[in-house]
Length: 301
Image (cartoon, helix red, strand yellow):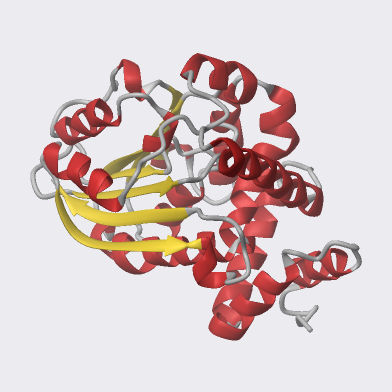
């Protein structure tokens, strides 16, 4: 049982999940508690606090997001193709759709960082391997920041002076701004709507770090995006990249065939891969039919 006095939001969330007939998220939470103890519980408590700022039920959001993903993934494994092949269609159906973005997408995606075991391990890689590279830096940026958790933790844990974020969705800007204003003054972050495929409004060789977490699979020409990001970074600056394979979410377009393909894109753009990991759903849930694998890397420009 989760201590209700130390982790009240986590305890209430866990209790509500256990009251449901389908408890498929509960075993993942139990596994992470066993492995990481209070470190995980403190993270879950923080994520639940941040997600709660929207007023959406966290249980409803994580269940809706998870079920939507599972439906898309079943379709992919039956057809061997993603549901979308047009960025414009994804923009209309997802990023510019208030019922999706404000209804469950942003809250659900944020909650997966603490509720999906694969996502929590990816987040640990960010905290352990990338965050120290940014400690004390003056400025850096994230493309496709979505809920804004990475930017929040760069300000909170790495004491970065200023972070910049560009995302195609006005709903992401609104959501992430609400998170960041809870803890940081407005002069420490600058978020705006922007499509990296159309360019980037940041000076060349001005940034000291960059993040592309789960972005490359959402666009048609990831090679051009990597090149655009590279030009904004000072030589030697770190880049954080995450991208899945065989993972059909409602807004995924490009399916990479192998880790070698992803690494080739990164290296061809002029980056050096310093550290990398690949996580799979089956690594944490051996009985799962989900074939998703996710590649994570810390690189330097």
